[in-house]
Each structure stands twice: as structure tokens, then as C-alpha cells.
Length: 115
Length: 168
Image (tube, rainbow over all chains, first blue to last red; front, top):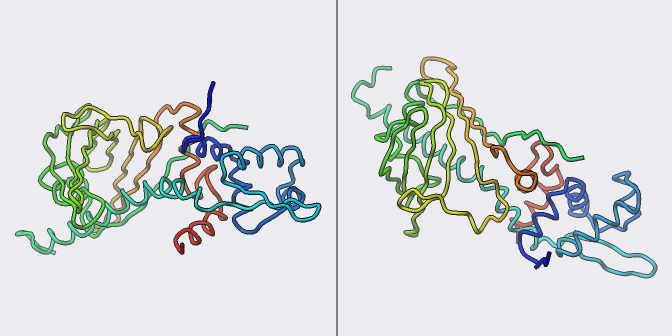
């Protein structure tokens, strides 16, 4: 199946819980594979495998320094995910604010405002 | 490794109003038109509403910039004054469900469960649960990937990212 790099691929990439853990760690600071292995306690091949998927969709970038490769998150690539993440809270949370105002309003104005 | 149990997203709110009134605000058009939109400056208009078990409604939200959004709602359970369950979809003005192309892979059926709890004569607690119904494994992954700090969604590290993105 041909795969284009689309937003969907970014979502597939972070659909895997282990990859979310890696992204969360790399948000905090740039790290090498070994540093990540120390923190998450998975095997090095497991960490490398997931990193390569994240790299492919450009959520994570790689920088070489001497013998080491450092990985870091590319925040711009995560922005659409952040927007989705807030969709529920934003839409319904916002609607609840409107409801709150409305309920207060009608109870003050209401004809049978017997408290 | 994959866990099929869906943990709903949740919003908890308390309102200074009797439970019956809060419930009516969700189920009567004369109330709904006044508040069912995500921010100040929007308008809401229900063009049809049969808010009963198995019924449906169609409403339009007009955003402050004039953009219109149609929403079709299917009601599963309307149990006054304690419970309301519905599925809501983006639709066109005829109530035909339209695919959300801007959200690829997003679960097709999102189920909302609202529980109204009486705290006192004039105070009501509302629990709003939101979850995909019968999601495909792919949909479930996308749902999990897009929420903060629930279930197997993102952990605390995401907060750092949010702060960072907000500061850009």
C-alpha cells in the first residue's frame, strides 16, 4: 500500500502508547537512545524501532554529535495533535460556560424567581 | 499490548440551578437556542428537535466570523431529570452526516453520556462523558492519541509541550 506523509500518519505514529511515552520524554529534553533506554526500561532495539517511526513522520529529529545521536521533539509537528486534544474540552467546556451563564441569567430574570 | 477498553473523556461541572432546570436546558429548544455553542458571540438555532428516546435533532451554530456549522444529534436515552445519552455528528443543513476530513481517523461515532446529580435544591452536578462507540482499533488509537492525561493517552510530559506550544 502506498503511504503518503499526511497528518494521518502523524496520528498513526502517536497512536502507539510507547511512542507517546518517548515523545513525552523528549519534550522534556534532548536525549540519546541510551538515555531513553535508562528512563523507560525497554530494550534498546524497541526504543530505536519506535524512534525511527517518529523520525519518519518528523515528530522527532536527530542530531549527530561525535559518536552520539541526540533526539528531540519537533514541536510544530505536534501542533495539530494538540488542537485535536483540546477539541472536547474546548467545545463542550465552552458550551458549559454558556450554559452556566444562561442558567444564572434566567433564574435572576425568571418571573417565578422565588429563592 | 493494545487495550480495548475505552476510558471516556470527562468534564465535571456544577451549576447553581435545580436539577430539573439543568436537564431541561439540554432537552428543550427554548433553552437550547440560548446557550448550545462553544463561545460568546455564536448563535444557535435548532431547526428540528424530537428530543426523546430514539429521536433526533438538527441545529446550526453560527460562529462569530459567520461560519456555520450544522450538527445532527441522535438521542439514545432521554431520562428526565437524570440522564441523557446522544450521538452527535457534523452534518449539512439537511442533517446528512458529513465525514470530518480535517480529522482523519477520528472515530465516526462519538457517544455523549450526561449524568445530572442533585446536590441540593438549587445546585446540580453534571458529569459529561465522551467516548467513541464501537471504535475500530484504528479509531481507538486516534482517540487515545488526542487526549490529555486520561487512560492510555498522554502523560504529564504533554503539559510541558502544551506550555511550550502556547508560548510560540
